[in-house]
Amino acid sequence: MTIIAREKQRPVTVSKALPGIEHTDSSALVRSITQARTSAFLRVARFPDWFKGTQPWPCSSPEALKLLKHLEATCFPLECTITGTKIGIGVATGADRVFISPEKPNIEADRILPLALASDLKEGRVQWSGHCLANPWNARGLVELDAYPHLAAYLRPHHGILTSRHTAKKDRPGNWHKTIDRVNLGLLKKHKLYIADIKDRLLPALDPGQTYPHHNLYWITSETWDLRVLGALLMSAVGEFFIHCYGVRMRGGYLRFQAQYLRRIRVPDPAGISPKLAQTLRDSFDTQDFKLATRAAMEVYQIDEIPQ
Image (tube, rainbow, N blue to C red; front, side, top):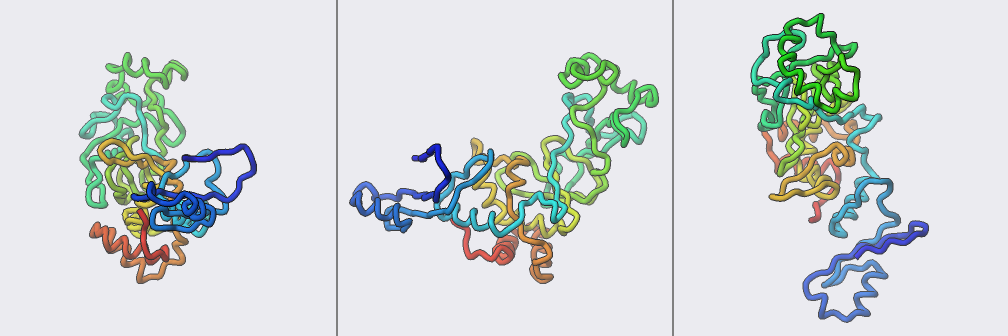
């Protein structure tokens, strides 16, 4: 039961009933709630305020919410100007079977973009499958097809499919060859972490500036983080704790790793991580050692346990 009132926010009490509560005296339960005291049949936590803004409210145990509020108050959001960390999503084309091919297409070399797919993420690395994007964008914007006869010959047989897309209809007729998203060429050469949108675990993979992400991949870049250290924190049980609190669980136990949830993950100041712990985190990421990453992450976050 959730109580919502149109009034100034006051302290919030969150409680969870345990087996046997139906046999407990009601006055004792009321005392437990009003005094925010956990009992044998009721788990209780009290917070000075509640979650703000338009983001969904976490639906977790009182203990998990208590830890979550603590980490929100003491750590940085994952996407943060202080650490120069950014989160984004890969390119959506509106016609993948036209723009994406399993090997290099017969077009101009500077129009070929190596594309990473979710299936390319394996054991913390990108094992590129060879898929490529026929890229209609350069640093200035959408290219003129007259300047690229091979690209034009590649796309024109699909003119009907491409012009029927909403993105083509709402733009100028001459821009029928655009993808839904503009390609950010500066992202290609950057070191970045990829996270697949739908997985049963949070498993970031490192791309050393060799591919561009497909639209079912989220990317993370940073000016200050060692991405192997950050990747270990995210793959640990602490990183997954945030997703379990914030995210949506789908049928079959799969999780959605959308940008709106990733941005809410909290991370410590990278400058405050000792060289020894940082190396342990690197090693755990390189070996994909979940238990080692979790032990190191809990030490970094200075927490003793992760409540369910």
